[in-house]
Structure formats: C-alpha cells, structure tokens
Amino acid sequence: MYAYVGLVGAAAALLLLLLQHQARRWRNPRCDGGRLPPGSMGLPLVGETFQFFSPDASFGIPPFIRHRLARYGPIFKTSLVGHPVVVSADEELNHMVFQQEGQLFQSWYPDSFVEILGRDNVGEQQGAMFRYLKNMVLRYFGPESLKEGIIRDIECAVCSSLCTWSTLPAVELKEAVSTMVFDLAASKLLGLEPSRAKILRKSFFDFVRGLISFPLYLPGTAYYSCMQGRRRAMVVLEQVLEERRQSTILQQGGKTQHHGDFLGYVVQEITKEKAVMTEKMALDLMFVLLFASFHTTSLALTLAVKLLADHPLVLEELTVEHETILKDREAGSEPDGITWKEYKSMAFTSQVINETVRLANIAPVIFRKALKDIQFKGYTIPEGWGVMVCPPAVHLNPDIYPDPLTFSPSRFKDKPEISRGSKHFMAFGGGLRFCVGADFSKLQLAIFLHFLVTKYRWIPLGASRVVRTPGLEFPDGYQIQIIQRD
Figure 1: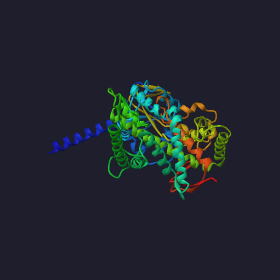
Figure 2 (figure 1 turned 180 degrees about the horizontal axis):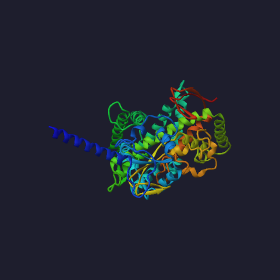
Figure 3 (figure 1 turned 30 degrees about the vertical axis):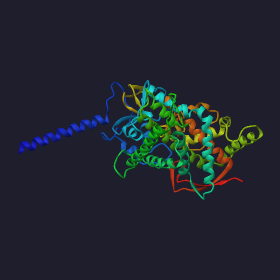
Figure 4 (figure 1 turned 90 degrees about the horizontal axis):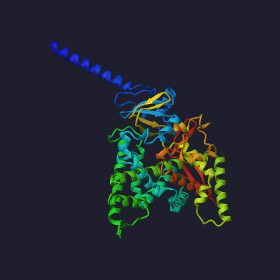
C-alpha cells in the first residue's frame, strides 16, 4: 500500500516537474544565437489570447498593444491562439515587412481568422496565385473601370440615398451608410437586386459584430454569431454562383457571355477548360470583397461626417472646393455628373479622406509570417513566427503626426506619395498587398462628400453610445437629420 502511494506521489512529482519545464520553455522560447524582443508569452497554449480579444470599441491604439508599448517599446513578443508573434509599432520594421513580401515574409493569419475569412481566401494565397487574383480584381475595380462606368453607379447610389434620408426625421448614419455601400457592392460584384441584397446584408452585419472576438465556438458567443453569419452568407453566395452558371452563362461560338458584374469574370474563370481558380476560392474571394467593400468604407464615411460637423472650418473649405467644381462645370461644357477629371482635382477632399482613414484605423492589425530568421535592431524574429503590424501605433504616433488625435486634413497637403501607402501611412496596407479596393473606396467617399456638402446640410442629433479614445470621441449610433438645401 505504502509502495503504491509512493509510486503515485513520484509520478505526480514527475508530472509537475514536466509541466514546470514545459511552462519555462513556453515563457522563454529558444532563439538560436539571437535575442528575442522583450515581452510575455502568457499562459501555456493560451498565451495572451484573452487579453488580445478583450472588447474594445475605440479608434485608438488597441489597449492590448498600447499597454505593452508603454512597457516593452515598439517591438515586443507575445503568443496568440497558440502561435508566437512579434508585434511591431516600429515604422521601419513595418515598411520592411510590406516591402519584403515573398523574400523575408509572407501573408499569414492565425487559424481563427482564417476560419472567419475562409481557408481559400485571397489572404492565404501566395506568389503567382495571389498575383492572378489581384489582377483579376483590378481588372474590374481598377482606375480604368472606375472612370468608365462605376463612377456613375456610385453617383446614382449616393444621390438616391441622400434624397431618401432627407425625407426622414432622423438617420442612424452608420447603419444607413452601411446599407447604401453594401447594396452598391452587392450590385457591382454579384448583380444582386436590393431585395436579395438585403438578405445577404443581414448575414454580413451579424458576421461583422463578432469579427474581433475570442474564438470560442459556442452558442451565445460573439464568435459563434460571426461564424453563423458567415455560414448564412456563404449559402447565398453558393446559390448565386450556381444560378449564374446554370442560367445566365450562354455558349455562343465558344465565347462566354458576360453580365457586366464581377461575378461574370468569376464564372468565366472557373468554367475554363484548365481553370486556375476553384469554386471554393471564388466563393471566398467574393465573400472577402463584399466584406472589405462595405465595412471599411461605411466606417470611414460615418467618421468623416462626424468630424466635419465637429470642425466647421474644415467643412467650409471642403464646401468651397466642391462649389467651385460646380461653378466651373456651369461655365464650361462639362456634362452633368462628376467626371473623372473633377474627381482627380479634389485636392482638399483627398486630404480629408486621408486624415479620416488615419484616425479611423480601419485595419487595426495586419499579420505576416517570417520565412527565415530575421535580424532587426538587435532582435531576432525566428523563422515561422508571426509578425503583427499595428498601423494605429504609427498613425497616432506624435513624433510622426503632431497632435495625432486632432483632425487636421492639411497635414496631408503636398504628400502625393501616401496615395499608394508609405511607412507612415498604412490605412490600406502596403507593398504587394496594398488594398486593391482602395481606389473604389476613396471614390465612394469623395462622391458622397461632394453631394452631401453641395446639396444638403445636416444637424447632429446625438448618439446612443459614445466610444471614447483619449482626445477623440466617436458615437456609436450617431444620428443626424439631413436637410436638402433650397
């Protein structure tokens, strides 16, 4: 009996020692011949995942990163959902990460993010496959397509929405703008009419609400709601793809007939004899494009309206620019409606948009993975480790942007280099994976602001809840009354 108890005790002690050894190894990961950045790996397996996914609705630097920046500096290590990660708020390292795509780094996201966006989403594609998908999207949403037809569609959607909103006593701006932008994206991507887009929109709204949440797939959790929203959206996308393939693709002399939307290109590609794109890849691509098209643009538009209302001098300068465009059009022979030339002349509007997306921080984190051991400023980023770039930490750095929480569009005057991203401006990413929808998003913002300031005025009515970032307030449920000018 005593021998049995002793044996159990010895086994328990051995197990405890083993666990302690594994815990020490977890907290102090090996780095052959190098020095890891400072930081904490958190609890074994879980790491600091709970802290990372703590709810936060601010527009500033996420608290998880802000607190560790203060303690460890601009480069630190952590562990998220079981994976070691180096977090970077260093503009030089961020720039290197974006510019060395394919050589030192590659696109990577933790498994929980991949499950949300799809195993075959464009962010998971590398090399030639990524370039193929990127060029496919640019063929439809690049500058040439925007100025040849999409600009008119945006104008129509904006004018119709503003006219409708002006008949209402109050408009919850983010919800209204999200609906407008989503319906436009659903039309241009999938050719969906508003009634069917409404069904898909509901699924995406559920998806977005749980996008940044702890990956616990149990009923009642935000992550569960997010994944259910994705599942319902994918069912609709599968139906739309199959219907198009069965009923609207006609073979005439060996050529495929297009329907004028992005789905037409998708069907053409997946029905080729030697197709490069799979159906799953096509579905995940359309899902990500829909999400990116409406979520980021609606967020930026809502914040822009709020910031303009809070800064009347900026609003006045913006209004003068757009009224000058109207006067020049009346004096010349320009047709009705915004032309591409007029859009490209909106210098101050561009500054307003850049300043808005800088403050909105629509991409709070961007992930990559090290392809080899990388030395940087005395630290080693081991091969296989994740790297998390944090654009807000750069966008709100007072050494780069004086008074960073102040809305000051003129700070972007005479800075054309930021139009494609730079080490100090990463609102749309950077490098090879610079957002392919950036031009589409900025065009929507510019056209909306044009008609808002020249045809309407608005009165803020308050908000259901106020999200506070030190020095910056953004109301969730921001309501306005839109009044048509005489």
